[in-house]
Picture 1 (cartoon, protein in one colour):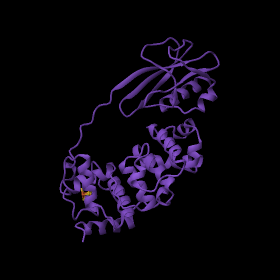
Picture 2: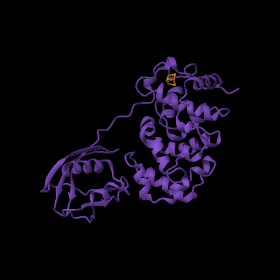
Picture 3: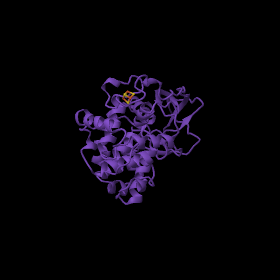
Picture 4: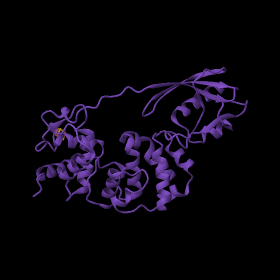
Amino acid sequence: MHPYHPTHTAIHDWYTIHGRHDLPWRQTRDVYRIYLSEIMLQQTQVGTVLERFYAPFLERFPTLSDVASASEEAVLKAWEGLGYYARARNLHATAKLTQGALPQTAAQLEELPGIGRSTAAAIACFAYGEAVPILDANVRRILYRFFRRRTAKPPELWRMAERLFDSAHPYTYNQALMDIGATICTPQSPECSACPLRVQCRGSEMPERYPTPRLRKVKPVRKRIVWIFTDGERYGVRKGEARLLGGLYGFPQSERDLSGTLLGEVRHHYSHFTLEGRVVLTDERPEEAVELHPLDAIEALPLSMADKKALELLKHHLL
Ligand code: SF4
């Protein structure tokens, strides 16, 4: 018998009663719908994905073939507001590479752009029932606590994931662990008394000790002028080149002050910094090349969140 058999049984029973069965990506075996949910959930919380992004994206692109035949710009437009746009570019690249038909094993899925080992395992397990463990941030935290480890390198974490894994019920086990990590074994106040792992969990006496908390870095603030150049009828935007916002459009930014009309301020948190932008409407041409478009054409382009906010200020000013 598996050494963690009692835990497996408890997890299975817990999931039957408490699992989040109504999540739309758990009510399908369609690999594209599962893949899309996994990519969206990589850096965005379940609630946000559910409320604002998952269904509209599927409405716009019902199949992966629809993604493959769309332009990257159209995919980015549908991703607008979700952030971490490399995900959308990789989704588009994957759709094109596979011509809309994803492979069926975790090993093959992992070869595709934007799909790491854990995401590949989740897709293969949830769509095809492959018996492979996953290792997202929630599962990782459970493993640190279950095995009472304060630190561990990725290969050790994968070994821990395999040791605890219930290969007889891969779907239920993986889904349950994600739910338990999100709702019970939370970073700040784990509720061990409600947890199905508690009987064999070695860290349940002092769960907050595992893993060693990482020091939070204070994000630097970048102060910029958001430069809205106008020739009187059209406005200047440029396509981002950097990894962060590649493929998205936005207004140029400047570190120096400009003469013009101050429309307001925008503030947006990126993963590594916070942008504080003063939005200025001016007839002074920016140094970098811009495309000139009327307002409604700019609204139709995929824009970063900060630029969307700047555009709102401009529209408000023009009212
Ligand atoms: S018993 Fe406590 S520490 Fe262990 S997995 Fe459950 S919630 Fe986390």
